[in-house]
Image (cartoon, rainbow, N blue to C red):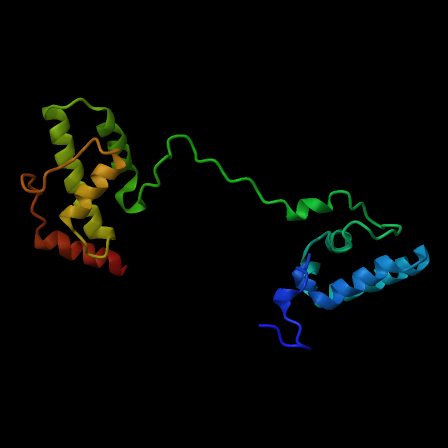
Length: 201
């Protein structure tokens, strides 16, 4: 809906540097249009002073003057013809997004911290072990330790399905335990009490 006389931000041109506001952008546009270099130079210096007062936190940077002139250069769309007191050729890097960080080798899975590094190593080992009694015993030991870890760090949760789901997930589906046949160790009352005391500390 358009109402005559009202100017909505959504209908305006997008600001290049929104932290300085639309009025400063208009001043920059006006400075670009001035006929002589002397006038443009004086206007630019006045705008820099105003930009610093509107965005005082920029002073926290050691090279904040460089930053201000870089911002002015960008706001002028590279069209302001003045004697720049700083080299603004690198100004565009301000808008460059950082490249995503690569995962470290062996960190393809974001393992939950509450299981600890030992369990994470067991996940990797179980993925490559051949079927047999040795793997079955390691699965039993791993699953029970996971259940203890959940009790210690998981806000009292000892859900068997959670253990089975995590074990399958972090071994890429290699280890699947049948909860109808698998028997977890009994977690006695003394262990549960110790776990509660640890979380309170």
